[in-house]
Length: 240
Length: 257
Image (cartoon, rainbow over all chains, first blue to last red; front, top):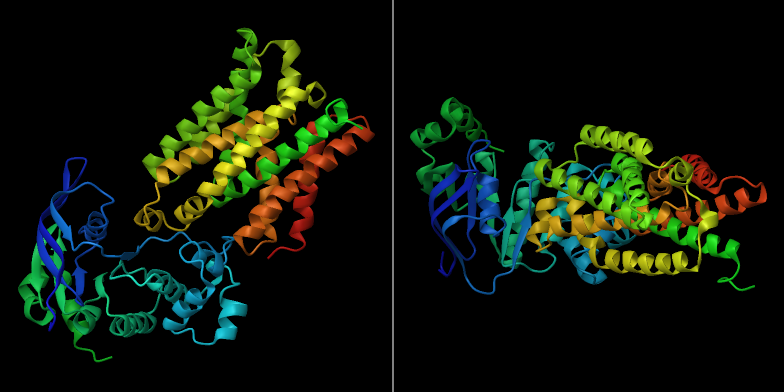
């Protein structure tokens, strides 16, 4: 990175639920403009890490954000059923009242036709959107107030790989345009190799940390995923 | 034609305001997927009314105290399990109704179960106006957080919304409206006035504004139509109000979105 400006320092971070250690001994630093991926098996504490970073749960150790940062968060869990009576417009307005900014954010995530946005997308029920459209709307929601940092907890369940690929392309494009920093949780190592400049592997504790090509070696993958490591490596060899 | 001195207009006013509040709050009960809780919560009021009658205090206060305990219990369950435990609620609320029927003094039992709108006086009207104002003022402040916490609890928390606190405030308002409605529809049916108009509104709404607005409107229409109809045919208004909301529900099914 040309312009090294530390925006987050984490030292010896630990989280306990009911006296059970869910995270311990995490140390890492995030620089402005980084894309830091967090990988690990299910239940490794990835989402817990985000919640600690956001100050939503008690933790031990140090989490130090640069002062005055605006943080946006896209959680993994959404509870949007088809019949939820909430329009896209109302959902966006919970965060930003200015209609021009709402249209601007939706354009930024690739919904470009303004007539279509005003007469169809905004009037639609949130629950009627397809998985891909919903993700676009969630990203639009998260970037609408021009955050300095985006925490993205892979809300991609039920989306095919092709669709997922597009969302990360889109995220990268917006990041390059607007110059924010991204922390993302992903199950897919392909995404990590392709988009992240740094990666932390966690399985309750830190297994590896550094540039993806340097640290995601067979031994740390084996430590992280056990027997599944070969499968992930194999996937990486496909060229999309 | 003075509203204060004409008992029928007074009943109509209290009924309409109760329907307004019940319908509006009901829409958020449905949003929070607490239809069953909304439907049976009023049953909890009966033991409270009974104890109040036995100890000669205001039945409204007894009902509210019992409802307060119930919503505190629901809130606790919600925090513990993320979702309200429907089975537990169903069992506990039905049992409290059984207990209430057993200990309510016989002469007051019918009134408590089905309401008696003819007993409404100017003081009841004033209390109703004041509490409905409190309900709408509070909801105006918390509806955004309440809705966001339904969409994603984590998202709401990350925006600095105290999900747990507003959920408790909301349930408290539900306890207030149910206690208010006991004179209008009685213990058995007040839950229905919370849930049925809102369920009807959901059938025909795409947006939150339309959903909550229609729910309130359907609540008002149910109370207004029910009281007029009951008065004309000299029937008991409580059940007619709930039946009116049921008719609205059936009609909205024809236009379901």
